[in-house]
Amino acid sequence: MSAAQKVAIVTGASQGIGAAIVKAYRQLGYRVVATSRTIKPSDDPDVATVAGDIGDRATAQRVVAEALARFGRVDSLVNNAGIYIGKPFTENTIDDYNAIMNVNMAGFFHITQLALTEMEKQAAGHVVTVTGSIDNGMSGGVYTGLAGLTKGGLNAATRALAIEYADRRIRVNAVAPGVIKTPMHAEENLKFFGQYHPLGRIGEASEVASAITFLETAEFITGEIIHVDGGQHAGR
Ligand SMILES: NC(=O)c1ccc[n+]([C@@H]2O[C@H](COP(=O)([O-])OP(=O)(O)OC[C@H]3O[C@@H](n4cnc5c(N)ncnc54)[C@H](OP(=O)(O)O)[C@@H]3O)[C@@H](O)[C@H]2O)c1
Image 1 (spheres, protein in one colour):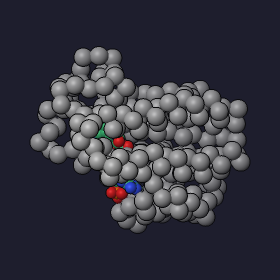
Image 2: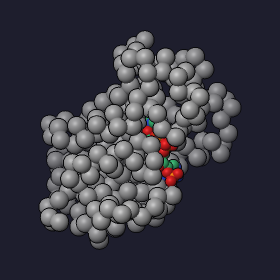
Image 3: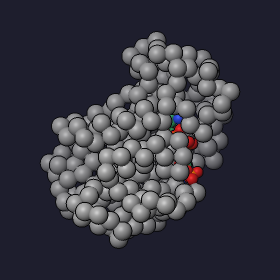
Image 4: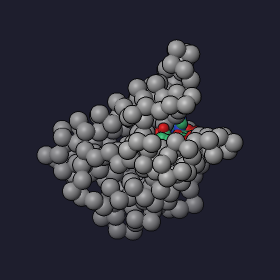
């Protein structure tokens, strides 16, 4: 193991897009700290796992501490943990609001602060956040008001932090997926969601991971939001 081998933190790593991102970073040769509430230990000695609620600052502190203790550095942070609550806006409860804010917003805030602090010390790093292709809203009974409150904010924060940290050579990007085949969606809804994408299908988790590893290696790109949505953001 080389001391110079880079290290990525991936949140929401137990399944779906997060699990695909862990695999993609390992293929890039990175060591990975993978976190979620239910994540299990890995057989791969270059993957450390930390279980916990990402909305809790103590989890973020344990994840960054594990990256430093096991692998000695933090080069990249992938903020992937997220939940979706799809209801007509006025039917969202205070519990729904608190749940989505906990994962999507607090889950970004705590670990991004802590990872950026480590990246500043080495004057290099990359933060990439999995947001959502809901900038233009959606129609046909797909409710994105509450999700948009969080994902729109994360897109805006991506651009803001890209500028704020550029002088320390830290890049900040986002990937905005359309509907992706993961355990987030019931199998019977997948065909229905396909129609919302000009390419006529939903996406695969590996296709989101590919966009993230592209950004990882595209060293002149910062403040970018790449839509991995079969053309949805361009119109239908
Ligand atoms: N799938 C889509 O169609 C789609 C579309 C647009 C955007 N996205 C975004 O893509 C990201 C990944 O989505 P996905 O489809 O892969 O979802 P998923 O299959 O439901 O996986 C979500 C991941 O987040 C973790 N997680 C949930 N609550 C958590 C908490 N409180 N603390 C720590 N980890 C937590 C889950 O693990 P544990 O249960 O072990 O905690 C799991 O690893 C999310 O940010 C989502 O908003 C997905």
